[in-house]
Image 1 (cartoon, rainbow, N blue to C red):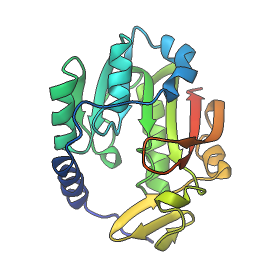
Image 2 (spheres, rainbow, N blue to C red):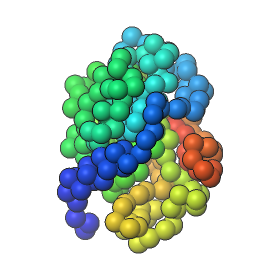
Image 3 (cartoon, rainbow, N blue to C red):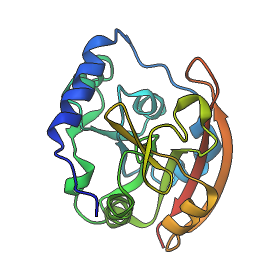
Image 4 (cartoon, helix red, strand yellow):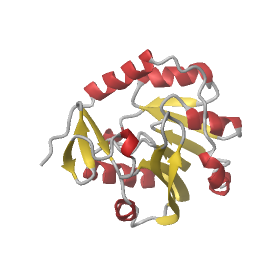
Length: 214
């Protein structure tokens, strides 16, 4: 059985990452455009940007008039968001400790490449907690590392669980279609497709998912 690591080293790591990077105002791609009808259904509700990083999707959503709660483990990432996107609410969140929101309090959750750091059971628990936080028929819009993401670590390091690796002290999960169908078996999957993300220097292979809370 794998022992759960302390969250403190991870927090220090991500604070260090955002301290080192001079990122300026976030720059987003337009992946959420395809899911505008789902977002429109949450127009009068809070949208949680879970694992928001320095706020690419938070900026996209706030520019389009949505009420966003930007959540991340890194205090430094949230500081950058407060600086560049002051209209967004920010909240420090450790996903493995449970989401600090009331049940049924969000119309949508966006989790963009933020659900791939965890052991399988932790991942299941987080997804179940997302379902708890969403209103009935609320939507999760997410991107996940693909097992085909060879430019960004797929298959690299020691395999701790199927498709879950440790390399240079960092842990990362990669998903195939079967993983996602199993993870969201109790959801209504509206869209699931494998695609390339061009945010970084090389194409990043990932899955896009739109799933509705049943």
